[in-house]
Image 1 (cartoon, rainbow, N blue to C red):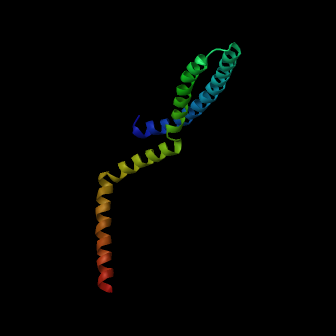
Image 2: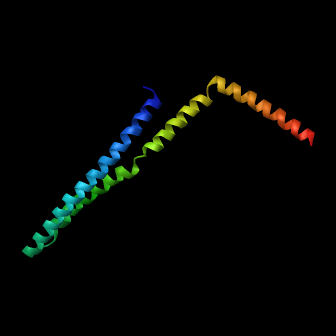
Length: 120
């Protein structure tokens, strides 16, 4: 597989990873929020310190942030397809035939510009 094949594959996978990150964040949010609420209520009922809810929160928050960060930082499939198109365009433009045609095109444009300027 070449680079373009990998980019097309990554475009499809990125959508699924983003969806999984959002789902994981949702599940962690619900479970973590419920655990925090239970720990907070239990601590208040016992009249103790809020040590356990703080510890639970310190574990829950980074996992939630990392999961959401994964969803936000992953490029969308559209972006990956644009990168693939850019790669394909770069390969076409640097091919020997394209370089030769660009040189010929440049010569034609210069000739036409010169003719237009002299005609004024």
